[in-house]
Image (tube, rainbow over the protein chains, first blue to last red):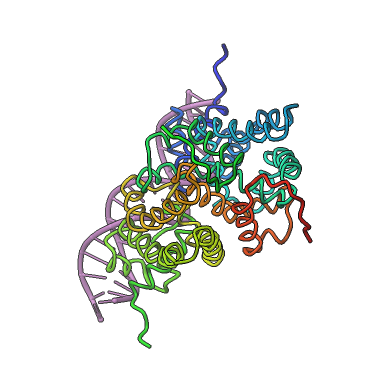
Length: 201
Length: 201
DNA sequence: GTCTATATAACGATAGAC
DNA sequence: GTCTATCGTTATATAGAC
């Protein structure tokens, strides 16, 4: 197996570090050290920190939507497809903290150009498919806002995990992605206000 | 009216800058410049950058929950109180972008100690009241997860605004907090999957 | 393609005059 | 309480040997 190129390793190290600490929180020295390289060597592969950051983001976000798109466009019934989508999203967010954090950082720090590029190359297709599904399932709501709400509550349940640990009502199973997925699916199926009593372990 | 103290002005400038660019993205020189002070003067009021940051966060988050608590503990019917709470939260997030961004930054960068303090001093009471309300309104769901979902979709509709502009389904009224509030209330009242057709302008 | 060495600027923080 | 001046460190980025 041919060892991966330095450029590739730099990118992957950079993605992890930028997700952890953000653009300003990571130095070129940090990246070099984690790659076992000297600082100067990085500048052979990337003109400056900005170019490295952009390349890292492109790599980090590329090919992220494919599995979601496949589920969104499956031939199962609408309702089932929405639940499948949320479930898959939960599993992806759980196993890929890096992706989860980078989205949040770009929402905070991304300039207009970067957000536009992100929207077009990563989220456009998925959003369109999810909007269509929402419009068919729930013609009474604005499809884009409904889609945004569903994504939002899913994302937030993962992103707020570090804080939720210290909040009233916390239970250890809230850290289990399957518990979160089941809760979200129940919310979608029965609505947030669901008065029928069910047993809980 | 007595001019506010330097310490106070430093804190307020720092809050704005940290919300915009994060801890690593703001230098002591930046803060000094925006205050019309010299760098050295800041160190008369705060021992180091870390202490200034902590004081700024305490100030930024103090007294944030009172209005929400008042609504959560009002004497209106449960259902109405939940809708009022979401509506107030929308208005607060809309008029206070700084607070909105600081929460997100702390979720990303806050260490365990800071998150624990934030949970206890800012969010504990509100969370408890919201959990109780959720438990009564919807005994079929885990109260904390339901509360988190509601907070999550509300927060996300505001935090994703810069990206949503470039996504399919965007409409200009999605930037209007009242539109978002109305959508969220409709979702809570009728559930996310709401098949009855209603007219939309 | 990676290294050493270095230029240049910005950083956090301190000392001491006023 | 604010200033000027400066220390030591770290940052981005470059030049040139190998």
